[in-house]
Length: 117
Ligand code: FES
Image 1: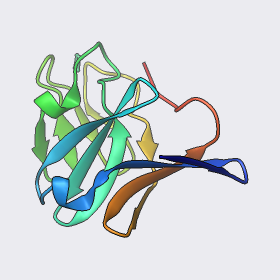
Image 2 (image 1 turned 135 degrees about the vertical axis):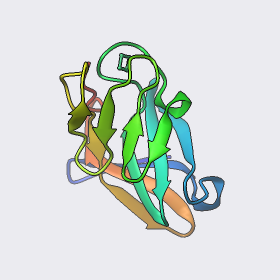
Image 3 (image 1 turned 120 degrees about the vertical axis):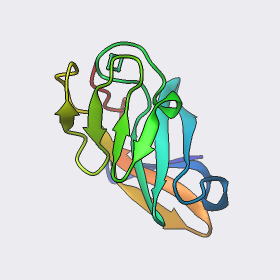
Image 4 (image 1 turned 90 degrees about the vertical axis):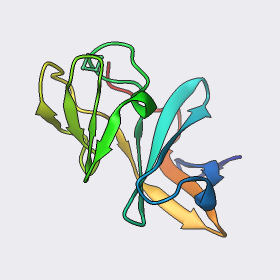
């Protein structure tokens, strides 16, 4: 579901109970993948493909508030997307999350979803 209001898009990703604490899930948004994580009960959303090369980050390892891309071992903060460990240089795009009626949504500017690659 997509709702265009005042230049923002609210995009429904999945049910909150589909992502248990410590788990992650890839969701498709207009052909782009978004990684939803549950960090000790707090939901975050980031671009689902590594900014270094093409690798689906749900195949990585969630540790604390960061994700390790297991292809070349870059680590990213899931709070602000910044690179913690190289070789990646570009941060992950992070999307503001809203939880409403048991659903996880992101609220992003209208238009194409921001992705760093
Ligand atoms: S593809 Fe993720 S670190 Fe290279």
